[in-house]
Image 1 (cartoon, rainbow, N blue to C red):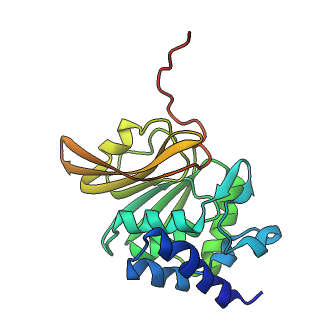
Image 2: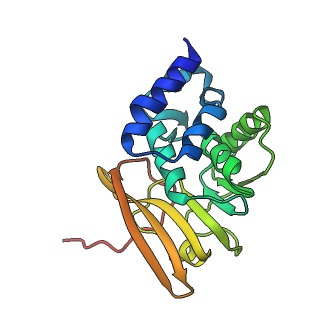
Length: 216
């Protein structure tokens, strides 16, 4: 496989046509080697428009979803970021390249371990990996940006309240097969603005908060 041609095709044929026009994001996708974060058995799928299974019910996002999330978050070099669901560590690496510090929490110890090796191999050092169930809250720190990498039926209020004023939260909200990618911005201490970006369908976050549902 010609990796650089495959990477170029991914960017030009999948990502740019999906309204990802931020030059910082496009340049970053050339810099961070996606193939180094893909399980060995799936190397041939590294640049394909598909989810890549990681085991334990987890999967790498579609490349264009990763890119749209990065573009929406508009990260700054001074930002502290919380990622819920480390997975392979690829999105973690992208976030770390744009932000000051990333805290990434993974419920599956094996995935966190492999992500640590992937990040080390790519010389990404401004990441703190932690293992635990962060489906509804993680600590009490405030963040400039939060990313939930598994879908949730509803966004936990705790995470909205952990945003600094001006902070952004990216989440895929709803039930399969019709979910919405949302960007929630804390505009004042008491007000949040929610923008629906696009429709998608991703694996659910383990132990996600469930709304009360009517039973007939």
